[in-house]
Image 1 (cartoon, one colour):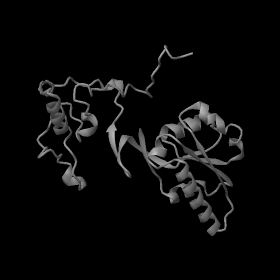
Image 2 (cartoon, rainbow, N blue to C red):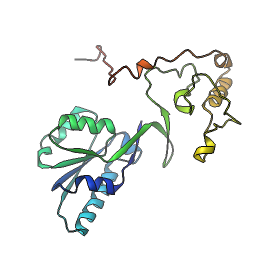
Image 3 (tube, rainbow, N blue to C red):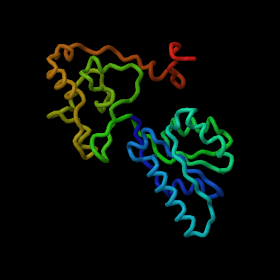
Image 4 (cartoon, rainbow, N blue to C red):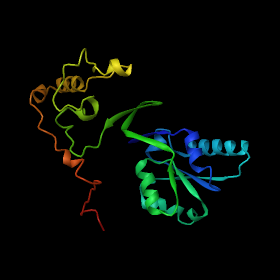
Length: 226
């Protein structure tokens, strides 16, 4: 899922301080799971904003809403009847949701309330880790289900490099925590599967045009289009 982290309230407040009526719009999708933009986070941010403006004697009306998703027109349509009553919107969705909300209601300024970080997993409560860079040319079938683009700090297609030691990447010394060597993980995984022969076969050059071909990517499936 898409992972995000909340922006500082001070930054958000500075964006909307000159408006009279503001909507804080949450998303019940990915950002809710990583506790950055769901209903709870909407309530916390809206409350912090009300307290701030009350303390400085500024009257700003702040409303709250949480949509099932902000990356889908069907759910964004729920704002159609009320959006005109607001001067600005703070979206707690991922970057895609913020942009789609802006596209649908272009006459309203929309400000992001979170920083979108990566596609990842929940390791444990309060800990989320990157697992995919959405490169568009997946090679997980060749590497035992472990992505070298994400898990290798150098995004090497063939490894490990000379900086790997005892299963750890040399970047560990720079970031102050143990970072597993992606290619060590791949080796151990293929060994467990009894498929080390795959490890010995060099990977082909990656077709990066699948992820960066000069414009926003699209997936168009004629079999599911109306």
